[in-house]
Image 1 (cartoon, rainbow, N blue to C red):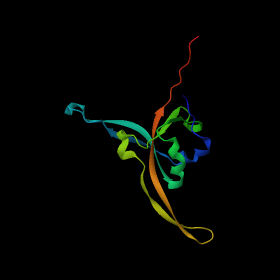
Image 2: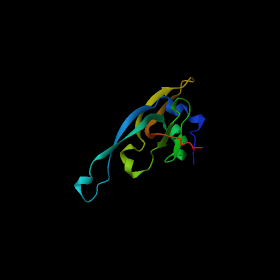
Image 3: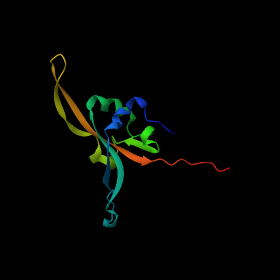
Length: 124
């Protein structure tokens, strides 16, 4: 099933930073199986409210369009293999509204696994 990333959430990816994640392999009985793999990902710092909107999309793969055509992303949320990459504290900022009221915006840092998507063509 091909799911497209919702256009109304494109703003989430505008300030995304492309990073390479180092993910430890699961430890097995033998020490020879230790090591890590590297995966491309997008790291984004978002307000908590935006993260709440994204949460239902977690752990599903979405294809991208526009400048990211040919790529797909998966929001890391609960996968135990990526435990250290689950949403993390991104700090907070104190602000003042136009009416003069003080408020705090809390942020989370989230990671999206980034994959290339290859389309197959039927031969004639």
